[in-house]
Length: 132
Length: 111
Image (cartoon, rainbow over all chains, first blue to last red; front, side, top):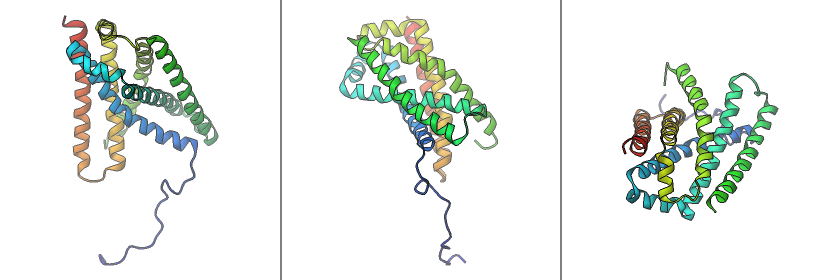
């Protein structure tokens, strides 16, 4: 039995079989931003701790945050946090048993992407305004 | 997470509801202090309200992200590494939350 070749039976359909939908993309993006925010929260705690330790510990951290690399990380952090928060609202709405029809879920997925980009742009403009 | 599905589900939702006002405050507060000098940043973070809200944001985030990453581990890891990864996940969440509370204490209450 153990030597028998594996049967050529069909496997359950996976990612490469399904056509892309907005709600599927939002689901994957929600998980990806969630995992990214795990790292972001560790960085936030490290930054907060450096500030608590005093000026000598904060100086190199503050320099990284203010550099072009730090700004790219902050921009990604802001978008990931905004997307994950908005999509979290979508999940809480689903938990009430509403908004689950495919057309509605697709529409709210597109709305979540659009709102996350617009809100991130507003945050970037506000931050640049506050910094200048 | 076996046999604890309902409590994990509720914990994920409850922490997400707690995070909503904290995240709105966090984005507003950080945006308002963009470009602040190191000295200005210290004054901002040393206010008891700011320090406590930062510690709460970090702690509730740690709780929420531990549940989320456990879900990812359950979905993709089938080997015996699963238990080790979940233990590391719990340890990381406790360390992050503890670091947030300790930092808030140093900033606003230890002086």
